[in-house]
Length: 180
Image (cartoon, rainbow, N blue to C red; front, side):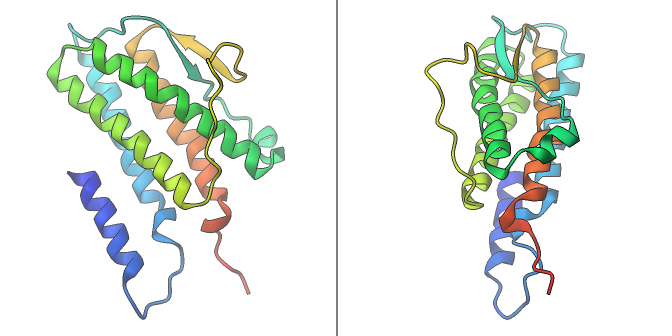
């Protein structure tokens, strides 16, 4: 519900007539910060979960480590592909967790995390960031690793949002203010 309210406020602010727009509302990092907070809440809930919280099998996830000098040398398309690949990997990983978990309190956090990933994909589309065309399988995909625990998966999710997604949105061409 709070995510829907945030999206509604963004749209209302975006369409408000007669006011200068310093940044496109979709570029407001408070929305991403909200998604990161919800991802952290899921991680905390997982750490306190005692039963019905395990991952049924290992999953491939994106590497979350960011070396800024390497990241900054990549062009916008390479950065976008790296983030889109990560989102593509996290969606089925979280969906598998969703089907594996029986703890209802944790399940609502996982549902939120999946919806937030879909929202992030929509934000990237609205910023004209090229959508990722996934390969037939994750096997051999660069910049990935495998996790076998629910806690590790949710930690990767948080770190991915805090790192690569944040960096991509900070540098998105559509979010840059014109300096005249």
